[in-house]
Amino acid sequence: MDIVTLFYNNDLEIKLLKLQSMSFSYLDTNLINNIFIIYNDIGEFDLNLIINNYPILYRERVRLVNRQQCSAFIDIKSEPSSWLNQQLVKLFVSKIVKSEHYLMLDSKNHFIRNINYSDCFDSNGKPKIHLDTYTKKEGMIVRYFNCLDYFNVQSDLVFTTVTPFLFKTQYVLDMMNFISEKENTTFTKFFYKNKFKYTEFFLYSSYLIYSNKIVEYWTVKNRNKNFKSIMCNIESSWNACENTITPVSKNREVKVFGLHRIAIQKMNKEYKRKLNDFYKLFYNSEICEFIEKDLLFTPLDNLSI
Image (cartoon, rainbow, N blue to C red; front, side, top):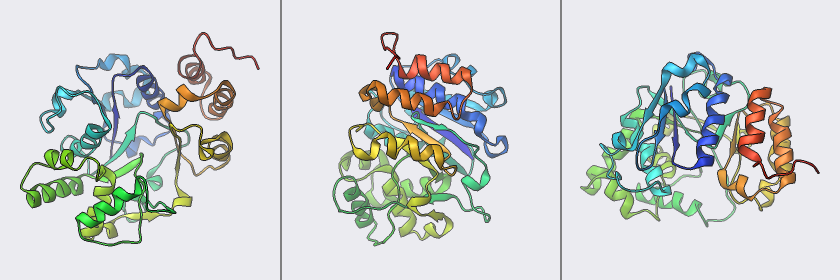
């Protein structure tokens, strides 16, 4: 499979991408074909700023895709990065990747334990997709039901809409072609027109249900997810240390950790200290020094209690 990470011109985004690249040492080298880093912003990014953070074995596999290359498929050349065009790029990258599957990441995601074939595929080669739960039909989950309605299907299954997310390349292409033909317009125009109605992951999972291709996926229950993230609304109880870093440090099944850049900005020093200690469980002293001095704490921060 290929691994794809989307990022844009933001200091913390690029620092998080550096941490992700350092964490590739946890990946089975036989699992990965290509590593695509997609610069979803105006201008160009210099690959030399990031390449040496990858383990030596992976450096020749890294491919930088700047906005100009994306604009061959999506009309966003002069538009700054946004949540909307990020979603489009995550789908249109299916025209760039070289493998049957691609694992979509955000810069916030990094590996904290060994990743091998069984973390992504079952014994029959079916790619993993994670189920989710909801209590009320409100908020983001409404967009999932909008997507089901679009394809005129019903399902008791609800899928996650966050990274890491494993796409089957051909199915992404099939979905975009299906919608383009049905609407008699480009997929980009369709998506922009319905920007408050659908999301990329929900459209894809709904298409899998509609086309009965979901049977070709390995569905995994929410409680067995192998990833966990600290998201931007740091004040929420589910984002607290006892509900994020504490259980992850004990649960060896969690292989991918996420740290949103806005969460870093909102964290108090106590949370940052605990997070700093958390990372020491997984990374060597060089990476931990980068996390402490470059990512979590500014020179003005006082590390004393």
